[in-house]
Amino acid sequence: MPTTQRLTRCRYLRKNDQQCTAEAVDPNAEVLLCTKHMARVVEHARATYARYRKESAR
Ligand SMILES: [Zn+2]
Image (cartoon, rainbow, N blue to C red):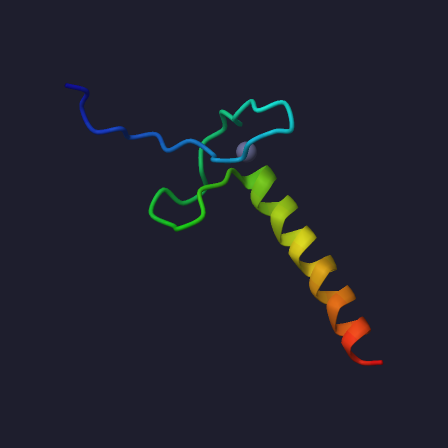
């Protein structure tokens, strides 16, 4: 039986189905992502939200 896993991996899945092997920023968070992918997701969310607001303002 494996001992407690102290390293939580990033859950990001690349287009070629390869999982990112970097360490997750916060192992206790609901979203398990490394710093790189966390930044990417935040950036994407911001851009999507901005576009959504712009479209709904019309
Ligand atoms: Zn990652």
